[in-house]
Image 1 (spheres, helix red, strand yellow):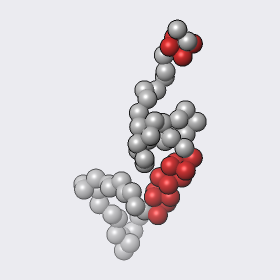
Image 2 (cartoon, one colour; image 1 turned 90 degrees about the horizontal axis):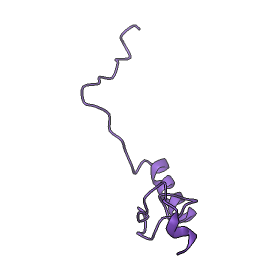
Image 3 (tube, rainbow, N blue to C red; image 1 turned 90 degrees about the vertical axis):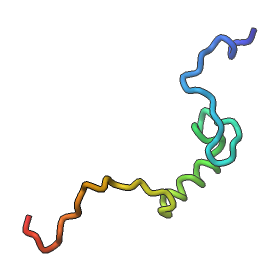
Length: 65
């Protein structure tokens, strides 16, 4: 039995969200810096969007604060 068999990981192993390879500890949840950078680039370009709630209204520019 090796040392790795005795250690319980803090994070479960899961596939890289970009390519499906096993994730690496240094770049979790990605497998490599390349896949991590691809995901970051998508966020920066606006390919990923987190929408706001529908009940929030934008304040009008004409209304005094």
